[in-house]
Image 1 (cartoon, rainbow, N blue to C red):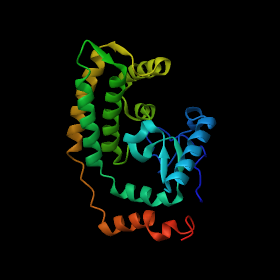
Image 2 (cartoon, rainbow, N blue to C red):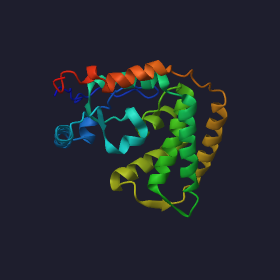
Image 3 (tube, one colour):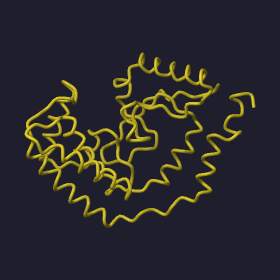
Image 4 (tube, rainbow, N blue to C red):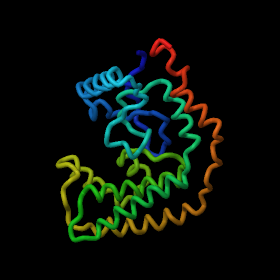
Length: 231
């Protein structure tokens, strides 16, 4: 079985710069120690042999919701490049921004009590900043909250963002805090601002079905498996 392991570490994307498809953050080795990476890759290879399947992409588990932007890639089949290329052309800023705005509104509703979960504070901030990024850049948002903060958070709120991230680093994101009025006010205003700006964003032209069929066959057709199973 032939597969390349994506173990390299590439440079950090500068704030405000659109990340390249598949780019990895420079803190990859810190966030995914080599012993963990080896264990994950070994398990993936075991699963492929035991189940007679092919793993096209394996990323850090917490990034399921963010798709291909994950900064931690354990394994990636070279053939998966066709999906990354197609995903870039299929990306809809309108649909993506609506997704993040809906998340932001739902998370904000959870911040109305006298005490709030740190996790909800961070999720609310990230969803709104991601929606803002998508509307401004017409491109997928970075996965890391720090990148979004550096790229688009107002200066008066950056101190609060830093405190929340430090609290998460020190004790995880499951703790509770007193309600943060400044965060609620910022979130409500930012949601309204991004929603208004989204009205000027045009949806992209649909990708022809022929391209989708070609990508599907590139992944599962006989040519994709030739040399792997002796076919």
